[in-house]
Amino acid sequence: MSDVAAIVLAAGRGTRFGSEPKLLAPLSDKPLVRHVAEAAVASSAQPVVAVTGHRAEEVEAALSDLSVRLVRNAAFAEGLSTSLRAGFSALPSHARAAIILLGDMPLVSAALIDTLVSAWREQGEPAALVPTLDGRRGNPVVLSLVLEDTIQGLSGDAGAGPLLRGRADVLEWPVEDPAILQDVDTAEELGRLR
Image 1 (cartoon, rainbow, N blue to C red):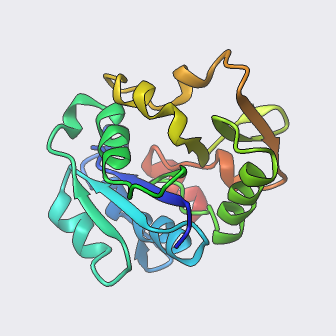
Image 2: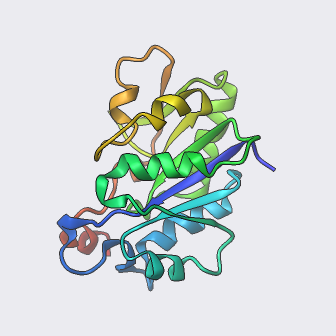
């Protein structure tokens, strides 16, 4: 089993998307969140933990036949930090890091996940490895378990980004894959992807 797990954050309400639940919106005949989960399952990162919240039953149904551990975040309305904390709390004891996947980034591939996990190992297991494209930070990020206490102290709608700024033990890793910057926040953005 891998010492790097994957956490798929799939609990948010996606309020900018409109009335349709964003993570269940179809892209190439499957829900957005399923693209992300399938990439995680096909990668070397194991186990895959999917954190659900808003419309949990439907999101879980979209993932039901995949090899993922479902973790329901009852506090999802309090923001992204609660899902990150829930995901970290569900990691197995042997995990040394987790790659954090956003449920609205359907273009992230298993190959990209594996590249980032390999880079994290090869670069001495920094506190975090953040992919960049043309100097812009993107996702998914690899977060080492040395950050767990800090993550458990997060609150509100902030992910790991604020806690990584200014840390000397965070490694930026340039990639050529535009998927690291392509999330779906609005129906118009999904339309462009389609």
